[in-house]
Length: 411
Image (cartoon, rainbow, N blue to C red; front, side, top):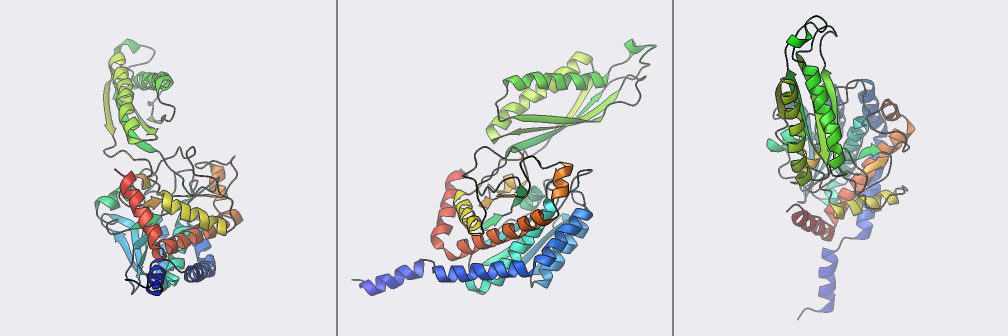
């Protein structure tokens, strides 16, 4: 028979001690504040010297230097990705392995209009904050640098090469227009399209030509008509990357890039053949030859872990931010976190940095990614992530809920 006192001691051993968690969170926040000058410097330099996907050598160096100075063991270059990195601090106490993901590439022309400079600085800050208390809470903290998010699928490559193996939970925060802990993204795929026709003088002998630009425009018109019959969550957008050489020459070669998005993989799977039919139909109507290459691995929608997101939401409110309820509507964008979130419990919250009239992927958002609002976003994102990690490392019940939900929802 177990006496009441012994039973109480067993219960206390299983339950997290609030005073210990509070002390750890306070220490992590102070460490992040102490590193603020370094974090803001990383963000500002990345903003001023934007590097494109898989070319982010300066951004990699700035982040790794800060992490190395904070006592992390740093690896620069992971597998086939020279601009990836991994920084690790392991406690003498066993426990889960928590990763903070850093993104740092920008866009041609639009610079840091997705705020990856803020994402990176926040990830580095969260890692520094958690490392400060890792001996107290146990486990391992990892800052994982994932290059090439903007169309390069860097996380997919790192996953295939085994760099997400052994991670128990991971998170990153995106700057945006709202504070949403349980944010989501949608699935996406991309197709490279080329039409080949026959050149001819557009005025003297147009009948001898085969117009590859007509083929491309007919494909676009077909897709525009198809939109009426597509599910409401589907988005199709495209650009012409080559439209011809001179107006007096019948275009004999045109190219385009199309992106297709949908809330889930099944809808995306159903829509792809219908888009492809528009592409092939345009070739048949004009006599042009079609070549197209669909992405091998469509991007999946983010599998956001609600148990972890609830912890993040509580911590964000503790920092004084007003949060929106569980998000089911926003998030019509896509990213390479989606695929890996089906293998590791993940959250990718949004943190308000701009007004709702300043959308990502705009010049205005690039401008907003430095300054007081961006700096507040960096600090609050870093703190909320570190505090959430402390919850996971200190509370076995929360950790179990996270794992059970992940096992049930990933299928």
